[in-house]
Length: 316
Image 1 (spheres, rainbow, N blue to C red):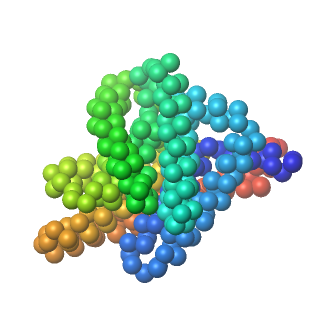
Image 2: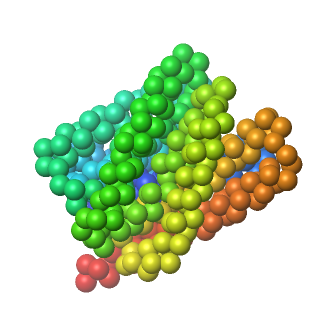
Image 3: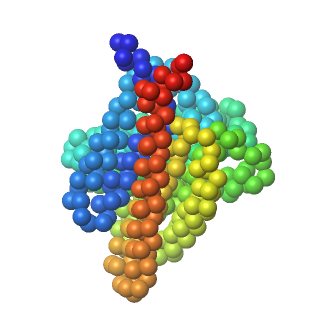
């Protein structure tokens, strides 16, 4: 039992790292050389991290309650459900569909709880980019959708997420430009600005049979622009002292590459000229390599920071 109490120290943002690792393995499948092995490996590692957090929340439910009430940590709690959706895709079959449905329900509970807390004590300066995670992050359900009888639910979640992004983006930009500076402890969440457009695009292309060229071009433009901005922001973000919030760097980079690969396949189906497709493929592969470096770096920093030797040094 004493060993189990150690799980209380597992940082909740680690769910974001699980999401990044699971998604990275899946995204590498677009290179066409892994035959499902990369997806399975990513899902397995993500599953271990999720299991650690699940034990923490089951043994110490008050910690989950406290996290959900926090204006920053509460917004990243849903990454636990999002990572579970990614794992469900790797499992597949009825078990995968059941796990997907459970993760969707869990995400909606996290969303409702976070929204309730924020509505009770809303302050503009509390807003950080991770606030996109509860309402827009649900679109991961579309990227991981098992289809079939669950397709209508996936479609509803897609349009809910896109609508929330459209409503929140102007407010978030206003807050970042005109309100108080984001505290250093929350600055890693700035990287999340790269995720919503890419996630919306990836989800849209996954579940919509006949995509609108206008919406695809709009989301693609925003996605590439936001990703480029965060690439530049990394010059400062990576200089911040390490914290579990570094996990926010991972998934936004991965989903950017994933969305571009989906656009490549779409453009090929539309008969777009080969030069444009080649350029977009190069960009997708570049983003995938950048995502791999970022995820590997964050995972290494986590491993070093939470190693037994490091914990013993801090305790001393």
